[in-house]
Length: 220
Image 1 (cartoon, rainbow, N blue to C red):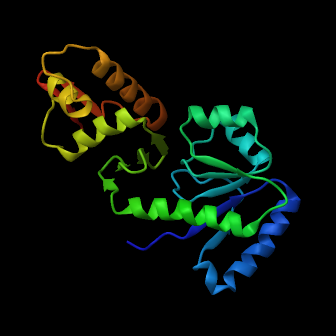
Image 2 (image 1 turned 90 degrees about the horizontal axis):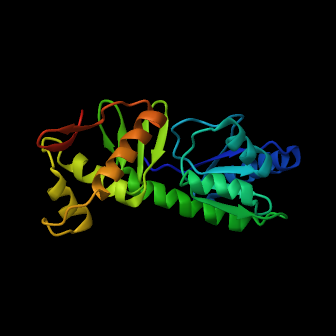
């Protein structure tokens, strides 16, 4: 698979947009930038793993419109606790870049995000209804993406790695939490209930994780 070196830029501040349009031309003419490509966009792209550069106004649009994005966001502006609260609740990775802009710092941050993404691309599992990346803690469909907590991610990976198998409660507790098989807890049921609810509500996938008499499995 080809490496992805694209950075999406969605800005509502006209002054910043003009600066990035000029920067795009400069980057295209400089080999030392390692062929990073800036894509000036006029709306967010659903189910896109590119890093996205935004300003505070377009970041606020994420909140107002409850837009589903992936977890790589670079915000130009001052630290905003209301934006932070929303992004933290959505498990979105973000950083702020204050003005005046240091473009070298900006590009280096984008490179770091791109490297994280590219290192995980080969790990993406593609099935009929969805794709999944353990390293990105994310499930993807055509309608959007869902970021998983670490424990949810471990549970989902175990089920994905063993699609033809069913895991009962004791097996999952042992493999994910390293619990003794004699320990009884509602921890597992709570995590799977929450995970199934998030998958249904955010990705519109019902019964992706099936609970049968002998345990849990992925419904392909």
